[in-house]
Image (cartoon, rainbow, N blue to C red; front, side, top):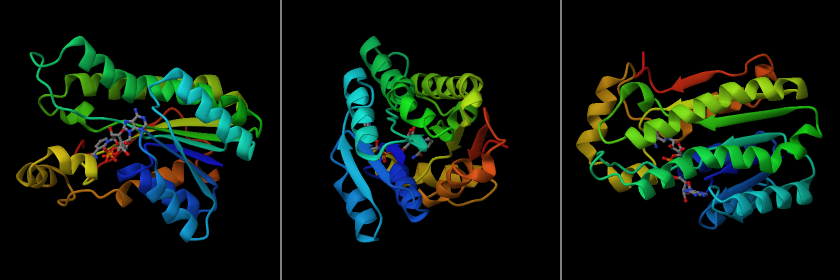
Length: 239
Ligand SMILES: NC(=O)c1ccc[n+]([C@@H]2O[C@H](COP(=O)([O-])OP(=O)(O)OC[C@H]3O[C@@H](n4cnc5c(N)ncnc54)[C@H](O)[C@@H]3O)[C@@H](O)[C@H]2O)c1
């Protein structure tokens, strides 16, 4: 069984769909009921359920993990994808905004690992992929809080790889470039998207499906000896 957070739309939805197509039972978790993702999967003949939870909340993540394990037994795959990316200068940033970004983008990855770990250890095999971002290298203005959270995701992944290797569990981070998702469309003007495409080696904007192959590999048997790594699946922007 595969758990995907932020699976209601965007990259998380594409990853959930791909995992279902590869034979996984999918537990799609999102702040808003991820019914569209569940419909996509079940109408394709795959098994999926949706859970509504705020993955920055300790009680809600514990409950979601317990429900996933209660329904399907062992957890094979966890993709920690949920994230938010508001732009603030340091003057605009206050402590509450800072805490919210750190909680959703970084605390959530820790909380979801804690929520599913017992179910993953059961199988003696596991794959954890944490979404980071190539912005930790490309450093767009107005993202200091976001970059701190996404650097944290890499540090967490690298450290956790040590702790979980004895259990047959790998942990890796994947960093997209700017990817055309509903979240990005809400905040980025079209001209900014074109400028980013031109800065990449591959000069077109990424779509959610551009991430699924890298995550499919890292969650497969073939990646058994790959852990603690960060892969920028970003069209060669951070090159
Ligand atoms: N799209 C990009 O350009 C881009 C670039 C680099 C990294 N990323 C990372 O990829 C991930 C997905 O981004 P996206 O563009 O698909 O985002 P999106 O905004 O399109 O979708 C994110 C989903 O996560 C859910 N979500 C947000 N906060 C949540 C919470 N507290 N609990 C549960 N669910 C929550 C939202 O409801 C939404 O369905 C994020 O971690 C983001 O930081 C995205």
